[in-house]
Amino acid sequence: MIRIAMVAGEASGDQLAAHLIVALKRSRPGISFYGIGGPKMEREGFDALWPAEKLSVRGYAEVLRHYREISRIRRQLLKRLLADKPDVFIGVDGSDFNLWLERKLKQAGIPVIHFVSPSIWAWRRNRLKKITQSVDHVLALFPFEPELYANTSVKCTFVGHPMADVISPDIKQKSVRDSLGIPADRQVIALLPGSRQAELRYMAETFIEAAKLLLVRFPKVQFLVPLVSRETRLQFEIALWKCKADELPFTLMFGHATEAIAASDAVLVASGTATLETALVGRPMVIAYKMSPWTYRIMHGMGYLPWVGLPNILARRFVVPEFIQDDATAENLAQAVGNIMIDRPARAAVERVFASLHQALRQNTGEQAAAVVLSCLKPA
Image 1: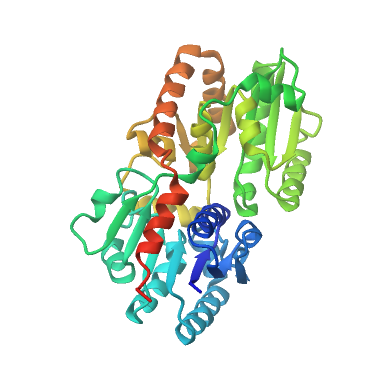
Image 2 (image 1 turned 45 degrees about the vertical axis):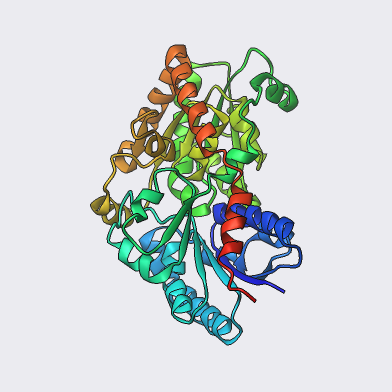
């Protein structure tokens, strides 16, 4: 039996890994999967020795607070994998955790694949040497990434993004609104303040205050807020109470982010995977992000690109506005979203760019990634 060890420590990584597990099982029945993973991976038969949430911390300050526990888990996992070697190891994103582990496993002769190229194109280009020492093959989500590895010993294959395969390029706004019971005369704005509690701590109240300003400008607006867990829903409800906004037209949803985005006229979204989801659905957006001041100073000092949002990075220009840290004020966000709401030609232009991005990323990712994984297996 083929045994594949995997580590995915974020919700987005859990989704990517689950997609790959399905494709691998379809290509080669009987494969077993184990390591660190989330609920979507477990639903596909993954044996989680530790839950993904143990690694789901955000920013340098937060990582330092959890460093001892994370380091202990990594050492224990390494010991288990060296004592009972898998046929291949796949690190799914999470390069801060995975690259150290991958280097040790590669030195022990275990084939190592890293799914999602570390963002060396945005910052930390000095990591390229470390990646070369740690990884045999990189599975890249974006088409410009393989050329970054052209002069290294690491193979890199563009496999597309599974979200582009899952999301239909022809979602009808009206049918989604009908299914959600939204009246035809309502304008709709989706608010996506983040999937983690740490993100909501920085973003929730700012998003709510921006919504209050937008309601003044658009009295018939409806706000859709998809939240990923009971904890984040409670956190957002507390923020509503603090902002004295609990009577405003907010509809809180458990999950269903794609539907919320599809029903909207515009989206206010925290930088991250949700910006790509919004682009693939084809809705114009305003991107915002806040983090601890210390973390921001470090990351800002390492920045190489003028963009932080994935749609802008992929387009290589500012297709949609970004407001980061001190610029991410309620006033700035409300003004930018309001501009999108009233400027139909600008919205149409953004939607055309997003349709092109969707086509480029729609590559049957699971099957392509599975083929690479199976090619890396040593002959029996």
